[in-house]
Amino acid sequence: MAESIFMDVKPVYLDYNATTPLAPEVRSAIVDSLDNWGNPSSAHYLGVQAKKAIEKARGQVASMIGAKSSEITFTSGGTESNHLAIWTAIHHFRERSKKTPQIITTNIEHSAILEPLRKLENEGVCQVDYVPVVKGTGRVSVAELVSTVTDCTCLVTVMMANNETGIIQPVKQIFREITALNMTRNIPILVHTDAAQTIGKLDVNVDDLQADLLTIVGHKFYGPRIGALYHRGSDKWKVSPLLLGGGQEYGLRAGTENTPMIVGIGQAAELVNTNLDVYTNHMRKMRDYLRDGLIRKFNLVLEDTGTLDLGQVLWRYVDINMLPNTLSVRFGGTTGSSILHQLNHILIASTGAACHSGDKVSQTLLNSWNWEEEGARQTLRLSVGRETSKEQLDLVLDALESISR
Ligand SMILES: Cc1ncc(COP(=O)(O)O)c(C=O)c1O
Image (cartoon, protein in one colour):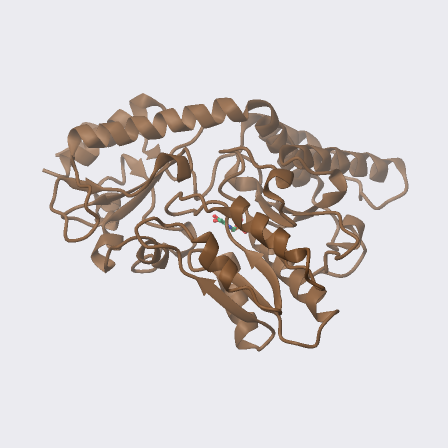
């Protein structure tokens, strides 16, 4: 059985949507920066040196998304960036109206959007509309989303690409429509996108998107576990800080800066600035190799309703609306967790988002596809990275085949 053949093989990591390793250049930049230990707020040369390194990184991150340095605030990660975006929009509305603000989002957002929104809604701080994505496509309808706008809408937040399905959302089209609506509104609606999964895989440009706020997560693009929030420079609204204190980050995020990690995210952004095409092409090539291998070894089912037998696979996507590195596959006659258990010496992947891998079924999959719980349970999220090779994928493909007979 598979165990004896693959006993000595290091498991192949296909969980790059959960996190990525540090790029060697990022690691060196972080290690070197550990000696740049001055407090960036200090006026003496140690502080100035640290501050300089932070500002260089801010420029690198800004340049990655076509922004200005002054539009980037470093945070602890994607979760904090999302909170900061939500809080900014609510605060901006409340300063101008006594009504309850409304927020529009989708039913497939990351829990770092859904959970804070649920809490704020339960506490009566805002009202939230969770627009469902169209089942079978995994994408939200622009018209349906825009039709939920009210006089009290303060924020539209839609992720650029889903972490589980890899489906790219029509964010640019949504933001274009909202920007047009804003021409005649007293209180503009802010538009935010969580770009955690898109950065480092596809080009992300804030002007092209017309985004007001955009979430950046270092550890999804071979950087460290910190993040940033892009906020468009505007005289109509300002970022409303969640953390108050020593006035760091130009008063938008208090707390003595983590210089080495900020330098690390800057270096990770620099790598994306220089090599994005190479990364994208490699990931797409590897993902497609995996897809083609599965088609050769399994029976690909095109109908997305009904049950699947052992040896059958199913996925729903149109390549143009899909992250280049992701393949969310439903395997008939088994479950995703059973496959991972049987192949734990060969394959490291996941059945859904890393943060709720303990859950029974993924709500995102149920909301995205025409499947019942069985389909969601049978799904494996395979996501390739910069170092994934054909040889690794061949091992995974052979192993998957061996347990499907
Ligand atoms: C789409 C998306 N948003 C936000 C996050 C949260 O990032 P972090 O856990 O680093 O705060 C993640 C991480 O899994 C993600 O995939």
